[in-house]
Length: 248
Image 1 (cartoon, rainbow, N blue to C red):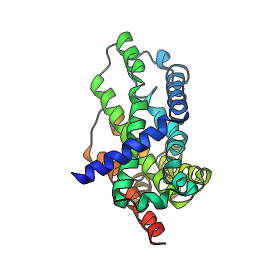
Image 2: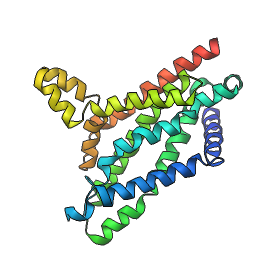
Image 3: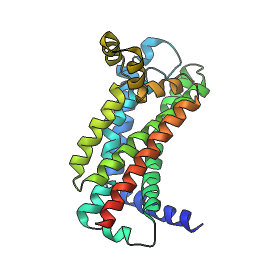
């Protein structure tokens, strides 16, 4: 019980830090504007003539998150190190894992809030047609899991440095690899010279490959396990880095 109380305390502290600065509001506004613009203007929602968000809406999420999620996650630990509060946090009567999980959950919930606020798009497509809302819900679940995976990667880079800009750049590069590993032009390029098993190995690390099932309304346990495993591995790596700081 004390464990969850500590996690809840850290999460509330982190959420308060987001909304006490313009960062949260700027992120939400930018995310909603991008979603609306790319869905209706660039994604060709009206030109497609179908009541679906698979291509016009969800296809853009891996690219939105590429820059927006690292912007949210870059401060998680880098800011603590910069202002000198990391040592204070780690000397409190909480474990390193409780601090990591609390901070991660707060940021993941914040990303979930931003995602929920796109509900006017869902209302619009339901007003204009009769979409399969089960497929839309599946897409939202996959999008939130993917955002969590990006965020967990950002946790690693933020713990590695006290400079937020460095954390942002490194996490963007890592997340870009996770996208390009399954990006169709890259896959076609690999198929031209690499063996099939190597192509399968590379694409298995792609968030796009595992997100496609959610977009189609398929909740495949393998895709869920991929995102949760990536989150778990990244948070474990973060704990190793932070324990190194504590030992030092």
